[in-house]
Image 1 (cartoon, helix red, strand yellow):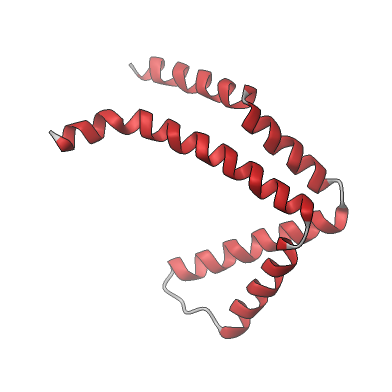
Image 2 (spheres, rainbow, N blue to C red):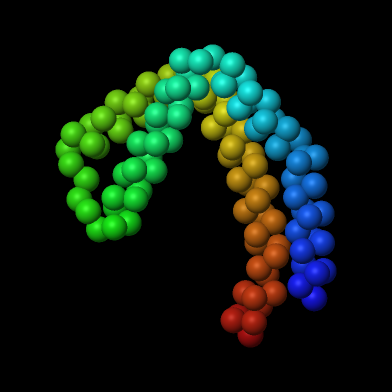
Length: 114
C-alpha cells in the first residue's frame, strides 16, 4: 500500500508541474527574479517573515521595531508589480492544492461525520 501511495504522490507531483497554475507560478517567479533588486527585497521579506514566525512560535514577544520594519518591507514588496504577479500566481496554486487536500481528506472527514 505504501508503494501505491508513493506512486500516486509522484503522479500528483507531475500533474502539479504540468498544471497551468504551476507554470504561471514558475513564470512569475522567474520574471520577479530577473530584477536583482526586487529579488533581494523579496528574499529579505521572506527572511523577515520566517524570523517573526519562529519568534512567535517560541513564545517570544515581537518588538515594536520588528513589527514596524516588517510592515515597511511589506509595503515596499506590495508596490512591485512582479511580486504582486507572483503572489497572484501563488494564490492559484494554493487554491488548487487546497481543493486537492479536500478531496484526499474527504474519507477521513466522512469517518468523523458518521
